Image (cartoon, rainbow, N blue to C red; front, side, top):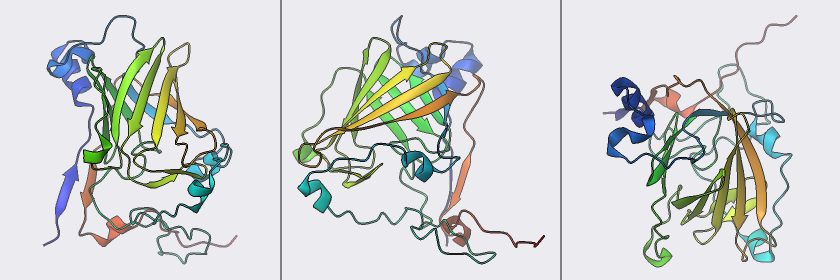
Length: 262
């Protein structure tokens, strides 16, 4: 029988705190963050000032990665969950043109970089959670621990992340990622280090995330670009994301409708 699952990603700590009338950062038995720490908590949605909703259009304006000969020679097999790369060929009405394998597990798109789905941030003293409105969530350790030994670490799509506050910024370092491509022509291996810097606008309504990929084997110089997100209203919450891996419609996204001539 087809395996059906309902995946629900909700900012649980925020919701529980609201119901109990207590500060969100003290929910779930977690210690609240220290006074003076920037307030990233809540919902955020990525904006596309250059892409008009298309991440490809947005990323086209990012600086291209300067790869070493080894980086340029690195071949990465296409993830079977990626969208159809042949988006340019015409589609007949009823022919889906963004397709996947239809699997329900895994971080999916936006595991590291936010996509068009909302992103919810939960802050506590010892960890920060990045919860997507869809499959995949990141756990950032803030308790001072170091990264694991890569010799005994199994690479994952989200890697291992540790963070710290530097003034008004949250700085996150991640290693242990699976080999793959990086936005704007980059590459990554488990040894590649990703440094993210989260910064708020003066009014707290805009979040800028700066991504810097560093790896002397792959890059001539660190590869850097930025994404921006707008803060959602404080009472926002994540929608349920239903997924049935046995439903063939799970393997499609956009279906062109029948066109009517003028």
